[in-house]
Length: 474
Ligand code: NAI
Image 1 (tube, rainbow, N blue to C red):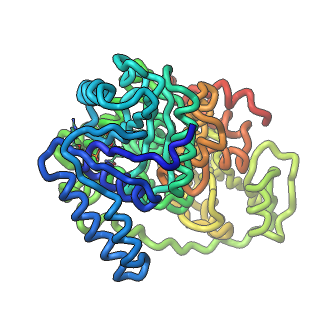
Image 2 (cartoon, rainbow, N blue to C red):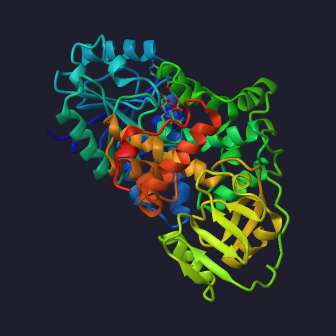
């Protein structure tokens, strides 16, 4: 089956519905736009006209193209029979179910209903439907015209042909579609949980400031650090998503929400929108002090270990000898050791040792713990040292390790495949790389070792290693 020439009814003319209407009309579809709020569909079309006119002024669209797009969008005041319905109404199970019952009375049996729900089970939404095989998730990201990802979510009853038709349609609209099974958080909202959770754990442990956590993760290639990102999303929204994933997983402690965030919500410090979250606004995150420490001269430098990270160190220390068969990666400076974190703490190695974080980018801020004199050598590696508490996995390593772990669990549970997980995280939340791309760079054995050490340290369930990850070749 194909939906490529379908007439489309979009229900809900809010933020998402309006964006979906724009994309569908620009792709040439006749679009009907319906909203129960009187005047909402007309207002959405008028606002879209303004936005598109702005793009004409900037030279990004022609006036003719805008006219043609707008002519394809018709606000309507009743449900109408079409080939495809895309639902983007309020995020409420009962309201959506009631709408689907109304729709089934109007639509032909062949029509497809796609829901843009971001958190409700597609399986549960389909429960009372006469034709549950015709319901599929079509999860767009905000802002719809700019974000490339669409998660195509299949519930237990969804027909594979229906999912494939929606997948193909999204591709025709210039989006990258990824198949997902309907499980809590689908792909992106599930795999992304540790990005926030690890920052919140570090804050709860008083291990680092929000400024340092954000700087280190920005240096690792993320557009925003987790603290500034939570401030942008709004702590109420972010906390609600975390709670819903936690509850939907039968309170698996892996997904436990944070008291640190609960307190921000209790205080009404919701982030940018209230003028205060981790930071105060409009100022935002203060800049970190500039660090300029020159490493002292050393008699004997030895680069330890193999692999991409050892090679990067060796490139910065060309005069260094090599100890390829070492069981650690880093730099020995006379009697001192500067070790890449493997989940052990600096204190586990005695005096003269510092551990440093996973350097995903060759330059920039990097977390360390341990001997400050040894740490001066990080500047030789092109890195800017930022002190944090001596905890396993520092900042970036534990965050990336946990993102990989969550993605591994998602794949092993059939939520998506590895390529789908990578595409979803890069296109849905702009990650600099996908979890399995990081894994290819870092390799499975050190990730598993790091997570096992976090698990021993916290003695909880959060750092339970995915059996899928443990089985991967090292
Ligand atoms: P919104 O509040 O901007 O728009 C919802 C619209 O639906 C409103 O105009 C409302 O009047 C209308 N509506 C409510 N009940 C209706 C009904 N029974 N029949 C017809 N119209 C009805 O909400 P938004 O943000 O556009 O979200 C819509 C859906 O998209 C939700 O399911 C949400 O979870 C999902 N979503 C939202 C994202 C976001 O970033 N806001 C991202 C991805 C998905």
